[in-house]
Length: 300
Ligand SMILES: [Zn+2]
Image (cartoon, rainbow, N blue to C red; front, side, top):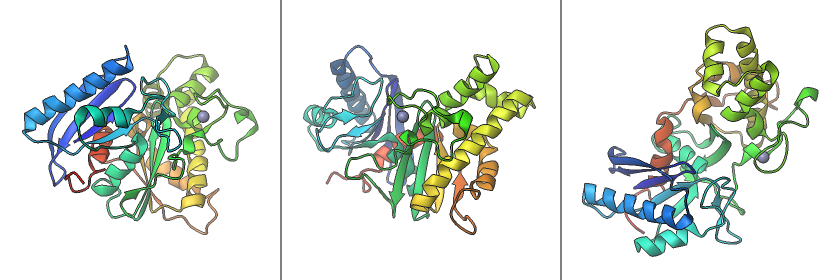
């Protein structure tokens, strides 16, 4: 079973050995208290185990990560889990070992195992949604890192920033001008709305661009240029075989053609063979990747 524990919703799915989903359920994250959220997660897991008639291995995708230094969740803004020993508390209640990893790592793992980047050796998975996360999978294994933050490119500054991009908007992390403030769906909408005095959501702006609205087209073109610069920085560092987009902005189809046409301007190479791919599983990659944290489906 994979469980995607978000700040607003918790989703769980039981996968068969071949990756088929046997059961799936989604609940709202109880915002009242950490204890209430723990109880809801345990009840969700028990009821799904009852439904499929099996005791499952348990993998969890979470916003942020368990800090190797302190053993508690870090970097999970606006969630009841930040600062809590979520893995140990769930292990105690569920009476079994579990595996827990950053949700963008789970996304990248899902797309690497049997998703759109299947067969690629080094994969960078990007979630451009409410925030902007990243995860790295090498040879089928997620890279965690000494501080459990590998792939967190969203809180690097936007590279090759132009004068009107500095210092940039305030980021949830406390800095200004992070990649997240430009490339998240929230950031995309904020830049458009500030420039044009509107109050549109990211998907509405993308729809207007599709329909030929000149302001929306300009905003999307600027977004593509920024994504190309940000991903060129990733390519220069990691040289991945494939980059897979997830989150709401991954639904904008023209990104897959336009961004790779631009990123060669900043990549230090004669040509760029890295592929930019849409996700195969979309929103399901969170739970799928979490389930794949136990590759055999058997408790170790
Ligand atoms: Zn930031």
